[in-house]
Length: 487
Ligand SMILES: Nc1ncnc2c1ncn2[C@@H]1O[C@H](COP(=O)(O)OP(=O)(O)OP(=O)(O)O)[C@@H](O)[C@H]1O
Ligand SMILES: [Mg+2]
Figure 1 (cartoon, rainbow, N blue to C red):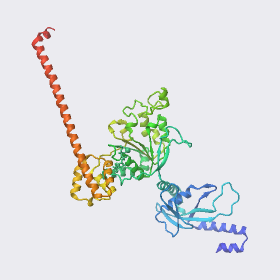
Figure 2 (figure 1 turned 90 degrees about the vertical axis):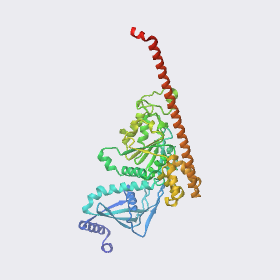
Figure 3 (figure 1 turned 90 degrees about the horizontal axis):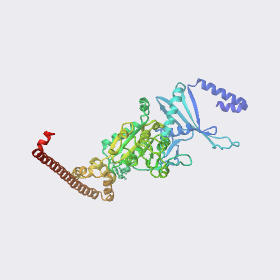
Figure 4 (figure 1 turned 180 degrees about the horizontal axis):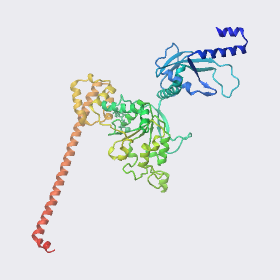
């Protein structure tokens, strides 16, 4: 009303001055303060505006009949935001914050190198004056962190590889990336549920452990070693980890890395919130001796020319020591929140230095399919719960599964083949398990026999030698017993 009155009675100059004065008086008496966060700050995009928009879009308390929906490029989910002049209340550490989204028409533009959008958009944050410090110090940081997290979650995961060897792309990156869409999750992973929840809890603690790692002075990273026979789900577990935490994966091909410094460069170019994977570590590098270096790339130019000298950390070959530094040296903490995962089929081939805590903090044995794991496979592949199966059949399966030593990969193959006829799939699996168990038993017996035969032969040989020695001694005693006395 005041503004309308001013508009009709006073000339423009006087009008602006009075509005300014009016606002000043209003602010003086008001117990609130206001912050405008505009979409474009001068000519630059305001990062905070996008962050606030994302943050508010994740709030369950959004009410309002009109919301704006968006789906970003490369994203598999929708986000929604506030429409014009919609208001939302947020609570942070017991302090209330009022957010309002405003959209106004921009006045006609004069010439500009970078045309601005027709609409001027922004958020107004209203808070009580007494809470100003808290809001400005921690609330806005909190919003930025949350927004980054949401952005990451909405964005597709990426799978990076260093298959290009040591060469860099046009932007100086040694990694190549593709969208990572592996469907494996902890729900689909068949393994002992207790062990599974242990791994999940460990990952969760790691992801939420920023303060803990800071307090204890440790680099924010964790190493997992997955070992076990082929087809037991090691690679599937890595995919499940990435999907669970929303991390990107860096699949490091060690045979493509020529030197320790190249390895370091690769590490430096990884982002935080990522899983760095080295599959089949025992096949990639000679890991038996820390002092000894091993050239992993036998076709490298130096090697072909015969000029490549090999020495520990010599700079032109990759060594175990280089790999240890990669996982736990000073360089390993350039960046944060990173997980190292190594996989192997032969843990006994690995150097103990690589296995120690701090490098490989958790050793996870991926075993042959157990009974609880089998139930998970039934559920995933056939949609059968435990109660859908007869008790007698379950008992038979439980009795035979450990003896059969079949991998989840083998079992899932039988289930996939017969997935149209569920009961047939189960009975065929039971036959396969029994056959395998029988075969294992025969092989076991044969091995035991061959061990026994070998032991018998060894005993026999030992007996023969002792009898021969005994005879010789006897002969010596009877013939030349005096010689010794003489000598
Ligand atoms: N524990 C499991 N749960 C569910 N599926 C599994 C499991 N283990 C294996 N599979 C199935 O078998 C296939 C092979 O598994 P995966 O590649 O994870 O095995 P791996 O242990 O990495 O084998 P390798 O040692 O040969 O690399 C996958 O496609 C997956 O579907
Ligand atoms: Mg694998």
